[in-house]
Image 1 (cartoon, rainbow, N blue to C red):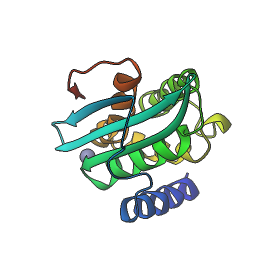
Image 2 (cartoon, protein in one colour):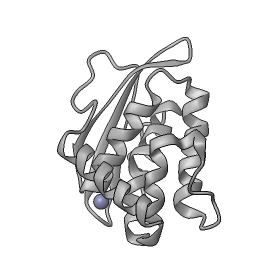
Image 3 (cartoon, rainbow, N blue to C red):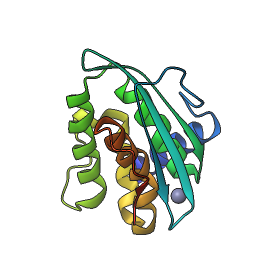
Image 4 (cartoon, protein in one colour):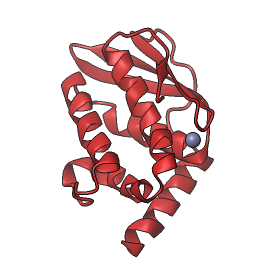
Length: 149
Ligand code: ZN
């Protein structure tokens, strides 16, 4: 677990300092806005989709290091995936963070598995899942503001 925690801190710091796929996405097909009132994180996620495949995804907004790093890793991971694969990843990621019995070495999650460290800090779980809830709203074409509350 201590190795995982170190890796977790390293990954969060790196993606917070230089978030990937950050900024507006011209000509997005889908988008949604999310808010985590508990922490004050606000994110929007925008996607370009062709034949069910996510060809581009970007995020904007401001929030704590965990929410930003999670959004950054999420965009990196789902680019090039199908919408169905993105939904399946949402389920796996959500389970990793909310189910203490979920394996922390789920190979399907790859680098996202470092967020298992957040399980030990229940107040931060909402920060880590905000981008994913927002992504799901975007692919569901749901235009209501997503709230983690
Ligand atoms: Zn936060």
